[in-house]
Structures are given as structure tokens and as C-alpha cells.
Image (cartoon, rainbow, N blue to C red; front, side, top):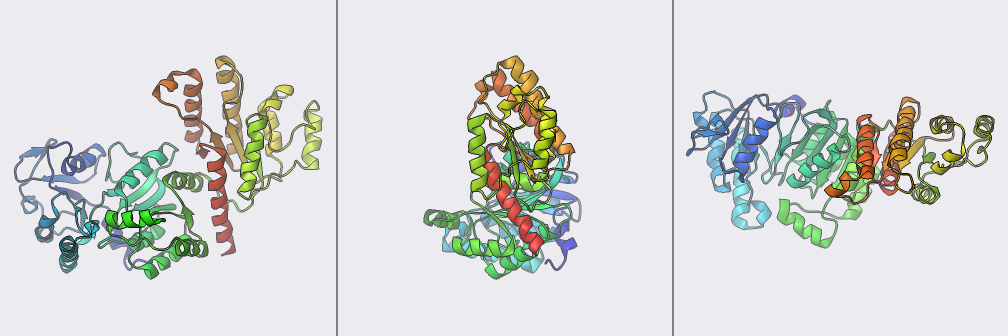
Length: 481
């Protein structure tokens, strides 16, 4: 665990921030980092630093960090070249800077001796001055609660997911796409080469952070394997830890070193450690997002009985196959449930089974929502899966007024009940012109409404079943612990 959580946490609550190397060039990091703070409503004071400009984005610019008229500047974003960082650290000491985010790169990730020596000298200097370094070669901190951001147009609302990413671009993409699924974030930290602040330290931090309920990470490699394993063990018993391990193949391992100067390590070792310590390991960014969606919106689940509803006969068969292949059970309806069905829907009672082909709703005089509630209440099911697919033949009026209404009603009814539910909404490979079509616009609107109700939505049965399997595995592991 961290020796001093409060001291480390204070690094991410700056009352002031300076962008050294701020610029009016809209393609530069110095311009964009200044704009990130302005556009996201950073709650502290913002100081652009550039000796050639008087003003940047409406803010007074300072020739040097030392010229800023206050004795302390909490957070510095470095957008200057690597050769200027040592002098920058001296300036930071004069202003009692706590944390320097080095957007600055072209250091040890190049593999060159000169740049590697300079990176080590930067670390020695920072330690001697009592300054913490985030990076180099990283995008820094996204913390919506205080208005820190490393990208444009990220959600300003806070949420329960925290993360640390060696890839800055990957961190931004993760936030953007997960946000479309309703996920919101406590903090996401891009830490690049991990010169000073390491993945292990961030893992300990998120494990104790009261704002974080789920931890997501993109890791290329670690510099102290033993310490990282200790951090994994500490974190995973407190909250879910999901890791996307990059550099699994030979080509990936080589690229990992040139990206963040990390040693990738053996995937066999990573798999064994993850299994032992209850860490959820995923293989790509899509799986990372799917997993975060599951852990964000579902309560703990330790059993594997699934009721599948939605789609016609063919889709139902395939869905059943997919869930069984991921280790779930597709139980038959109990005798008690069948007796209730025989009394309420005598015309189809012996036709209803699991998976439930939604086309049989047409044969019943009972509204689909009533039938769904009746089946969903059965004790043999632990999770309900509702699918909205495009295998029907209905025109726009029936689809909008009946199919969508029944689907939304069903998901809301289950959410209000005692059973956890997931939704599978398949949208296909659509582009902007397709969104003008009534069917695709209707399904997009339906998806948005379901997400707004806090129900996890997945793009396919495969992604849902795979994410739920790992989700249940974690909670079974926690229960056994």
C-alpha cells in the first residue's frame, strides 16, 4: 500500500496549473493542454508559460515559470523539449511545484544512450528537489471532478471507474468509447515511461481511492515485477482490477520498448499471476470496455443460470450456443413456472422455453411484458439477457410503436425487479447516412434510453457472454477468498 495516501492524492488536486511551452499553434501540445483546462472548467488558476507571447487563449502568458505571481504552482505540464527539462525542474523548485507531467518525450523510448542518460538525470534531479514526475511521454491526468483533462470533449461528469494507461492515445480512446456505453470516471492517468510514478504505485492508489470502484489498466510492461504483483494482490481483493496487457507477441514486445521503454514479459506468467490474484485479463480495448461496463452496472453475481429473451428462432439458438460455450447454464423452466404459464397463457404455455424466441409473443393474448415478467421471476435464473435484433419483418410504425415499446418496457421491468439484466443491442456496421433510416435511428435511440437507465448494453451475444463469464469468475474468486 502507499506510505502516505493523502500526500499522493494531493498531487491530483492542484489549486493551480502551469503549461510550460504553451503555444498559439493549434497543432501543438502546448496549445491543446491549455485549452483542455479551459474547456473542462479546471477549478484552479491556469498559467500559460511562453517567453514570446503576452496572451494565449485569453490568458496572460508568462515568460518563465518563476515570473508567475504566486509562491506555489501545484501542477506543471511540460510541453518543452527534453533538453530543457533539467532547467525546468530548477524553476519548479522555486515555485514549490508538487507534480510535473512530462508530455515531453523522445527519451528512453528511443533506445538511444544519450536520451536514456538524460532521462535518468531528470529522475535524479527531480528526486533531489522533492518533485514527483508523471511520464515522460504521456498525456497526464483526466480527473473530471476538478476539471483536469488530457483530451477534448471528454465527459465532465464523474463516475466510479479509475484507470492507469501507459498509452496516452489508448487512454483517450478508452474514455471516449466507454462513455458511449454510459461509463463515467473518477480519474484516468496516462503515465508513459513510468520514470518516477509507476504502475504499481498507481494500482495501490486506485485500490485505496474512495472515488474509484472499478480499476482498468493498459500495461505494456513493469519495471519491478515483485512490487507489481504485491500491488495486484492488494488491489484485487478490494475492487475489480481489469488489465489489458499489451505486447503479447514478438512484434508487440519490440514495439512496446520503442513506445514506453518497457519490458513486456511472458504472457504465460501474466496469465498465471492474474488467475492467482483474481485479476481480469482482457485482450483488446473492446474487451476492456465490455468488462468495465459489466463491473460498473451489475451487482456481484456468483451463479451462471441465464434466461435469454429476444430475437427469432435462429438468433435464439445462436445466443444459447454462445452463452453455453462461455460456461453458463441455460436452465429449462421449472414445473412451478410451467404451471403458472399454463394458467395464464394456455395457448403457448408448453411452447415457452429458454432461450425464449420472441416471435411466439405474437401467438399469445397476454401482453409480452406480462409474459416476460412471469418468466423472469423464475428462481432457476440468475441473469436475464434481453436482445434487440434486426431479424424481424415489421415496418416502421409497428417497429417503433410495438417492438421498441415492449423492449424498453421489458428492460425497465427487470431492472426494477430483483434480477440483474444485460441488454444486447446489435447495430451493425452503420455510417452516418444509415442513421437517417428510421430503423437505425430508432435502435440508436433505444440503445441510448437503455444506457441512461443504468442497464449494461453489449454490441453482440459474444461480447456479452465473454464479459459476464469473466465478471462471474471474479466474484466467485472473491467469495472463495
